[in-house]
Image (cartoon, rainbow, N blue to C red; front, side, top):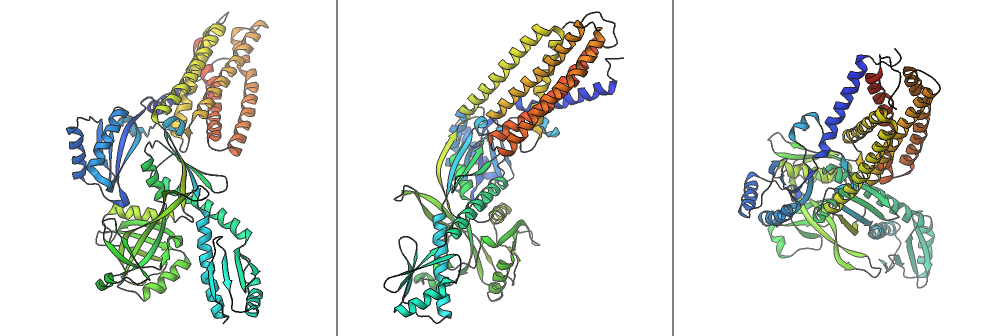
Length: 611
């Protein structure tokens, strides 16, 4: 038989289509406007707060679809955005400032589909709405920090060399000025420092002074490392906080782009980004009489509960030395965080804890926030905010590994573990631009994309049916199956996000699929005109058209691979959807249509075809 498929091929084809429909279905349900309530700095949410929120919404006649309390968070779903916005004000009054009340969008997929792990496609910022940030890395503060370290190094260097100097300080250009008593001492210092380090540049000035600058190579390396490290930390932080489909990438010399799809509340997004702060471990002083007169070597800091604590101004260790941290329960079923340090940090901790058993260590979170003021260059000035997030006693000496105990609850332990594990920012950041793409704009983008797909499909269907009759109708069924398979595969694959360029890729692949069917149908008509029998024309038409279709798809795939390799962001999204579409169109146009034609015309003596 020329045109015949065995039963197992039809079974496989049916299974593929059924699975495609199953995993494409979740995309029909859309998303619900929702409010997510979480605690700041690991603060737990209890059932009493859930009841308060329920009662408040009922009292104000705000109807919700569901209220779920799980994983230490409360998620409230609503029918529309109007109810969502009204409920946010009500809930914010109930929970106060100790909790984050964030607007969000959550899939409205029925619960039964979760048994099959069926989820909707991940949508990009232009289709789902969300927040776009342009973040500047403040490398100037990094340079200030390096110059302060250089001053301390120079102090130590001159003391070891027994070389007298009058003063070491910095000027307005952040240059170190070394002042000496006489010209001979200045000359000796200049000759000694000239070969001291390749990272500094020494200039001899009048009045027995030397100027110390950071070398150009060092400045470039510090700026590059600061931006790269901050990108890595920001990406880790938003990922570990459960925010999927985020975009964190570099732009220019000192800027980073962060996009958070699905988040409508800039306050929530800023809270996530500001969590990427610097950490320090400091010694706590417990003497009560010290409050009357605070020496210069101590600072007063506050806990989230407002308790004042006196800390040593000099940090024992910073978060730069932390390599890993894990939250779990200790032998007394109390929350703890196990911390691992690098070799340098381990040596520092071993030396300190050996001589300070019984003392108390505080973990200090340092954040740099926008002050609302501008400098002479128009850049936003940052304010330093410090808060104690944990206090624990030193029970025994430790080095590379130790545990932080005395934590209130397991969620606070997980939050602390996350902060430590993600690392400390190398340089402070400031948000220079923020843009909200609201759900209404996202809906409009989706509508335009769907309109393009629908009108493209309709026009192709009308042409194919009028031109090729039953064969055109079969090609139309294959076209619809192709669309379902594309959507289902994009829903299954992790890390694949649909954007507006992705929709353009889908439309393009549908056009390519139509081209394949046109090639097949025209070749069948040509074979009929050459005098072949109907069954032979079908067989030869598919066989001879295959090479042309394969060549066309391979050349398109080569372009797609180049686009994905060289491009980024939305360009990669276009490449991914196009590549998926190429694979599915080959399957539907060659296997799907052939199976239907074999069912209709196979094993029959026919004189003419409806083509």
